[in-house]
Image (cartoon, rainbow over the protein chains, first blue to last red):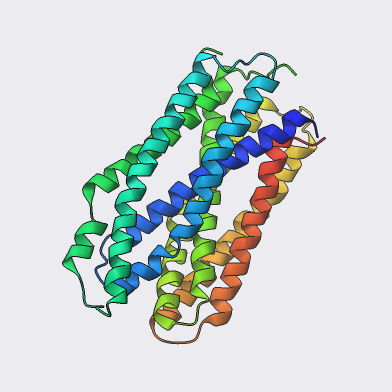
Length: 159
Length: 154
């Protein structure tokens, strides 16, 4: 296998890790939507750790191996329009992911605090945190951004 | 190396194939993680994770498998029209995709029966654990396919 083959494999594998994290977070958000019992929410949030690892590996991997490919491959330059568009989308994705994470981490921390206090009664406050529309829409915007990144990578407009 | 630019007409098929494959891998990772967490000893958590992993496989993984396969056939028909010699990486794709789909289906059935039995408070360890192993085997097979599709070994 040539260096190009390895770089392409690692770049695409990173993109798959990124999409996998979004699928996992989406399932988690759906599973948490109607929960208000702190111990159940805490149990479900244990899956989040897998998503956190995937999103870290995926987002760093696509950037590093993507830039490496752009430098390594004749015919592509880092300043090509579709690559600049990808970099902008990557920044947008990171910003959206960071804000979404803060909102859901606050819900997770509240569930943990309620559970540690020994209060396992249904909590309307926890439910409202888990049903935060702003967090949901930020997550949806993150998904749209990643789909746009995928479209940009495959169609390479202007290349 | 000169970057390979595909004809524009191939891109729709490739997009469908890659999107389906990525969501499929994501669903397998999600279901597999929940199944492994469900092996924890507390019964409430086990039943909850078994139900969620079953639903993830059924509602996300199965449709994504079909999207991936439809996209795969579409792009194959464009890149290798009938009669053209197909390289070995296409063969790796078939060897992993179709048996993987069958194993996925068996995993869904086992996970579904296991989740149902756990919800009724009956033992289902061998069902849910078998579903977990199958899910992880399918995931491993599709990671090999991902390598074959990108590295394109001769």
